[in-house]
Length: 215
Image (tube, rainbow, N blue to C red):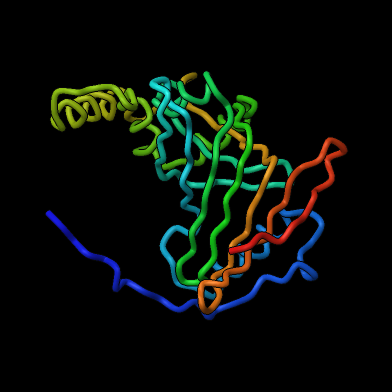
């Protein structure tokens, strides 16, 4: 099989990112970009992000998760702690997040360390989820091999009957991580592939060193 994609081309013309306009704290720029994308560009799940971990087999692995909160401290998402990504993070908390907003021709890459958030925060988010999603967290032993789809459906039906009229408590193996950034790179597409790239690096005094990078 051979597919030549060399004619797939696009000109990037929707914005610019100037060093003189970059704030001292990269989280302020992330917030600005996120709100602009959310307001002006019709994209599905603007909070979708790729998270890369180093697996137990030594290989990097990427997958899409949903960002549920961001603060000056970092980026929060939720998952099964016993999943493949959870086990990878337990062994090596160094991760990479990336956001690509094609409508705005923007990309953000975040290097950081992932750590579990405090249990009461995970409890609060779990309680806010629809009951079906709560039960889904109980049904799925994430990343484990299963015989077929029917296995999941039957397990869900049994749990629906068990928890009819009852609250679902968050299982200990499910909860949130916060990725505390040590480096962020902002990419704005520009004409002729001369893209704007601004990188922030965290310093020992918790200030941010800012550089423009060649595209």
